[in-house]
Picture: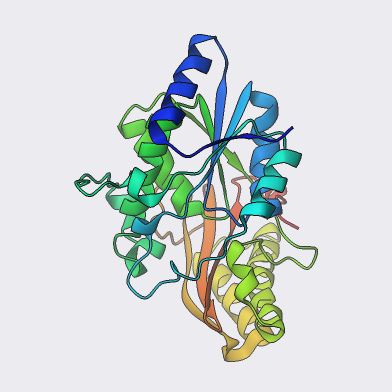
Length: 294
């Protein structure tokens, strides 16, 4: 069965209010479309937990900075519709930007400390755009649960903080990174990669996996783990991967740490050709539990 398609924000909210009044549990997977197996994993994670599953497809203009890829961000409506149909999605919410941000729109939602580093330091205003649109999507779709991927770990942490701080009655469900068989993290932006770029991009996951292997072998110094990741990336890709950051940080505060003695994330961002990619691995307090990614 084809999902119901709703474009109008008021109609979306009315549908959600009606479903909630009938006692149904609603779930939301927010996306910017061009759906791949990573997105589908979010739907698969949430589908058994809810009565009605909503997927939003909205390329959010206010989270793109000047010179970023808003205009060329990949889109595939027919493919997205087919993917949602196969995943058992009940509603696709696909508003136009002018409906989400009318001419008089002037409000922003901002999370402070968690956005200060990593991608937040390099993309001013990006996370304000993310939290603003997610807050609005929550108010329009009224989900009981919403699923986000661990691939954009900083985004996940920021949204969790926003939900806690503003008392949104939404449970945030996290889904692990989905990777290609060779380890490359799935991303809509992978479509930009040439064959040579894609080969170089494999150095990112290989670097992270090398660091995790050293951690599992007993290394706890953050500088050594980061150094292992960096050397592995350079050995594989040379200067084809231009690292923007490679940081070992506390998984909750996202502050850099010296010793890995708590749940930790090693996060990186890099330019491969013209394409900006992000990736991470989570190191659990128990090294035997760090095998989420291959």
